[in-house]
Image (cartoon, rainbow, N blue to C red; front, side):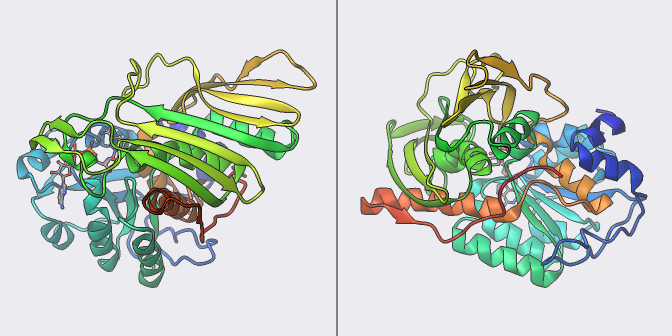
Length: 399
Ligand SMILES: NC(=O)c1ccc[n+]([C@@H]2O[C@H](COP(=O)([O-])OP(=O)(O)OC[C@H]3O[C@@H](n4cnc5c(N)ncnc54)[C@H](O)[C@@H]3O)[C@@H](O)[C@H]2O)c1
């Protein structure tokens, strides 16, 4: 991706970015009410990035960061040192470390990108925030909602920013759907549905251990998209189960599955919309993990005057089918991919840090999604409907 394509991916943000001088000491998002200025930005306007976790997903993030004109990866870390060393060789990164302590004490960087096992996120993100680094974390941002909220407050105190995956609100298809809803093209929104599943990752055990599960790994995309489209959730009921009690995993061989691998949620949104999400690690789906070739809708929103269906997965959408009372025949819209790819989160954050433009991805939204996942588990454990405390700024629409 060249600079122009990269900039254009944030739409109007791109225009601002082109106009804004990219200097080495741009104040960070000064407009953001509760956030402070960035402590260190150097390297000719590029954000210096440290990536921890050089496993599967780093193979998507690192090439994307390498093409980002606002980022320079200067530090890599993995507790399996050979992985950090090999990634350093492959992506021409000078510094690599076997432990977060060494990484944080090593070569200076501005943004900590956490691509480790889900169970490690809270602890490692906390260490990075204490060391005054901005943080982009793969999902979840923390291991409990309370911990996520605490880390968010810690980030403010430390004068840095803290964001979490996924980046689904950046797709042109999400933008199209949000715009139609905001312009009342569907009338009064009543219901929404989304589903995502595949046969489960086979390389690491953590997905099936305590703190893992199909909700934080897969359901998180649908929850982020649907709440982004139809608004924050007020209460929910959920049932989760384990369909496959043992798994053969790449790093630990056969293990007992502890985290849910099958989940269904019914959510009551603040504006009385009801939505349903299902996810699981036991879904036969020939397109599941790569997503390529899925041409059927996986996410729908229905209102009194129209309906919309997102074609493909919400992390790799390819269009939106829409019919309304004005034109009852279904037409396909928003078929352009733009530059959106699900692995762009850290690169987008580098652009925002470098230019001072607030990203569409919002930490309060990610925290709300984390609370929903936790509430779903509580609902299963207690057999009852759970009320949510958190919310976020909605609608999610690029200026
Ligand atoms: N693999 C994917 O396609 C994919 C896609 C989207 C998001 N994710 C998310 O990315 C994260 C990582 O997933 P993955 O599939 O890359 O897992 P992985 O097991 O392939 O890689 C995780 C890496 O983190 C390292 N690690 C774990 N704890 C560490 C610590 N304390 N210090 C240093 N290194 C540590 C491990 O050694 C491993 O190399 C998860 O949150 C997952 O949900 C993965």
